[in-house]
Image 1 (cartoon, rainbow, N blue to C red):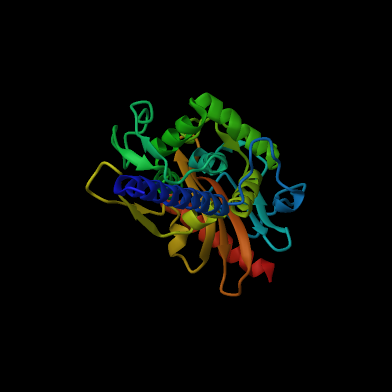
Image 2: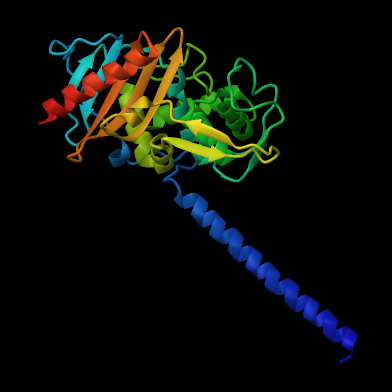
Length: 309
């Protein structure tokens, strides 16, 4: 065998080894990506045991505690007992709580390292944002931005990339709501800026719990205090801070999402754990101010844990 033939053979062997290693790494990446959340493929419905449900009483349970808001509920997560409810079945705008459904649909089609470019379409009606048109951002960083700091450009960019347009994505959100038993929830876009994105306090309690069960990544992200990342084409890092200020309370936040537009006032759905390991779900809709929302949520949590025994 000539030296030229040996070099050719060695080159073939080297390329074969590189090819095998590349396939192995791709396979490993697919496994890691799929293991991040218990996601549902298109058309697949969650098992009944994965759904969080409870029976609403025939009337409000609210005389023992007065709260400055439009609608609220507190549920014992272990027993399913409704500890407090006030207009919990009234359909209201829920603002960025909508992004929980957005995240669920995103995670059904999730590749965390996909790079997405922020467009002018994404920037519509979202003057306050971490992102500029032209920013190139990984999907995982956009998901953190949408859930942790409620960034609307991030939510739109993810929805547009997955469905092609926001109307189609809203249909996917509504299909998801139907799959998990949210009978009084309807969405028309992924951010919550539209007042037609509506639900009830009871459905918001079901939503946050089912989201956490089926998609552990949602619970992980929304229980963070902060997150730091850097767009692919920018030098400076960006820091996200959780909009759910219950993260700084005496309770441990297991999952949660805030929301606000003028039509909804200030909203919150969250799962809290106390020092004894007990969990309750607290939903506050229609509070008149940003701090009032968390003050009333703390009052409701204190009352609910005491009543849970």
